[in-house]
Amino acid sequence: MRSIDTEQALQEWIDSTKEQTAVLFKHSTRCPISARANEEMGKVAEEFEPRGIAMGRILVVEHRDAALACADKLGIQHESPQVIVMKEGQVVWHDSHHAINFDNVSSELTSSSR
Image 1 (tube, rainbow, N blue to C red):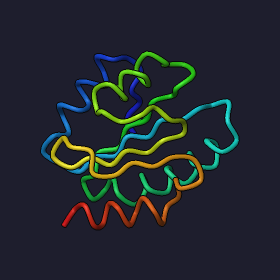
Image 2 (spheres, rainbow, N blue to C red):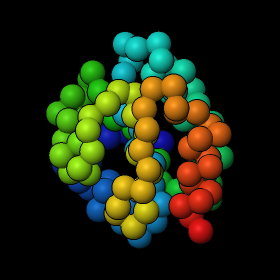
Image 3 (tube, rainbow, N blue to C red):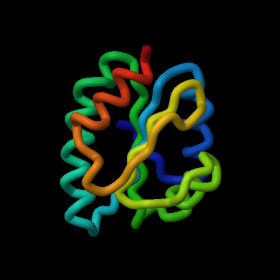
C-alpha cells in the first residue's frame, strides 16, 4: 500500500491510477476504530494488490493537508477512517468507520472490476 503524504503525492497517485481500479484508505493513528479498519485494509491489500488494484493510504493526523485535499479533489466529504474505491479516476464507492472491513471492500472491488 503506497503511502501518500502530500497534496502533490495525492494528485500523482490519482493521475497514475486513472486506468485501473484503485483504493484509497484514510487512516487515523489515534483512533481505535481506524486501527481495526487498518487491519482489514491490510487484508484487502494482501488479496488485491497482486491482482493489479492500486492501494494508497493517507495518515490523516500526520498528513492532514493531504487528507483534506482528498475530499476536495474527489468531491466527497472528509471522514476518518474512510475508504474510497475508484475506477478510471472516478469514485464508485466510499464508506467509513465500521463499514470498512474485508468483506465490504472486497465486494466493491469485485463488482467494480467487472
